[in-house]
Image (tube, rainbow, N blue to C red):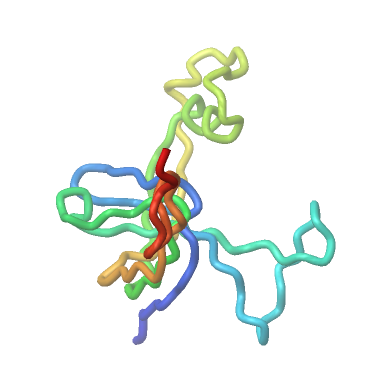
Length: 143
């Protein structure tokens, strides 16, 4: 069987770590010859697909990843199941710590599943322009 992924995209949010692994989420726009994913809030534009990437041992490596970096990831798909409390789920869904008044919401567990790309190699294609840096060959104004 074949499980091989090559995907390119922009890091869409700041990377995070868990245990020794580095995680980041990329936004990948589909190639022109594939069906688009229409953006309902902006007609005429396509919306990206968002994919979580896991870099095993990446939290302890020299690799750096920053929001806005354009990367190419080579790896394989992995699915995993986990349990999450209702409080955690609602907090993430609402992007707030406020949760409805439900007795024992911390004790109510929800079975969740996730599919992610496990990276065997990550290549940074380019990085966003950093603030306060001069383009090559230009000097800051002398005052």
